[in-house]
Image (cartoon, one colour):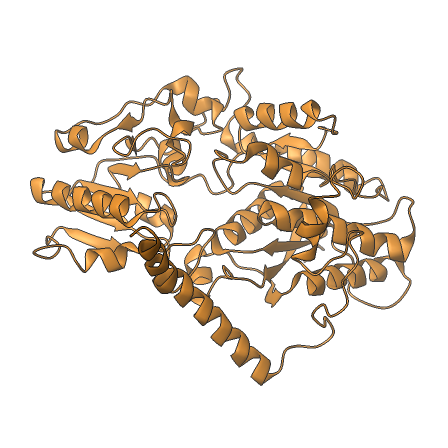
Length: 463
């Protein structure tokens, strides 16, 4: 049997939630050079949103290894791997690619932490280090400048569409930062079968953990969904949920729809169901996707499934549905109850990096979804072929942001220069049984406080 001609590519993905693990791991597979044999090691950053076993299973992405770490543990692991590659000591071979699939502040901390570790071991010159990649898990509709500048310094900052690439470049150039890292790709989880009508006709509401936030608004949306089910008994109406009560995802969910559904007068109609699972599998049976501003809308549009972004609570930046202005998808529950089906604007859809059936992704005919990751692959292959890379150079430094950066780094037990602070978690041993029990108890108490105690305190404050 002939030997494989593919090149081994070792990839590390650091993620802080189920959604970001999905984006990071799928992105790693999408952007790896075509002839690569990938070994993917997953690292889950310990915190409030660390995914549960059920959430990881629902995402459906497999890794060759997967473990939970603190920020300092991850940094030291990356340093040891790089030492092995340089031949300075025995150890794991170096990673070729590191994907930071984290909230912006955590990305910035990892960039400074990695820079410190590599500088301490190899000096300030060019070193054989991994290519570092970061980006966003979906629609970027808030904190554009803040989030982008916190991600600056990675070798590649991925933009999920032509529109995002233009915006990212404008922000970096506007502050005098190097914008060459901005690389246009697409959302890595688009795909699936093209839309065909189903029997029964199925309406899916894609819920979001924090949009909207208030109990009043979430109760309103749930009541309208239930009303739609009662008005259309021939339809199946599904409420697609991201997490179960007590689980956290990228955002905190203080008012779970499951709890609100228990209080529906008269109970839920027979044609109404709460569902979990992989979004792609739910879309396989969807005839109408309804949401406030979920990235699921882009997945749905990619398949040409009729998609509605609700206007009932207004078109507002705080909701994120302002991103869909010009899409042709904005509508209200009154219109949906009357039988309205939207018709998306093709130019708007194309500019979002969304396409189906091999159609153009961009207004200039920039290729199909299948070629969306070619530029990233080419850049990574070129960087890997250089034999050494210069130090990471984030825009934020102790000189440019002395009142901002130290606090961001300290949250991850790092000093202003990226070095581990005294008392940072020990990276050289696994937590013992007692420490593990304390961690689980603390996390459970935190989640209880967020979902039960905090809303009560806020309501009392409004009296």
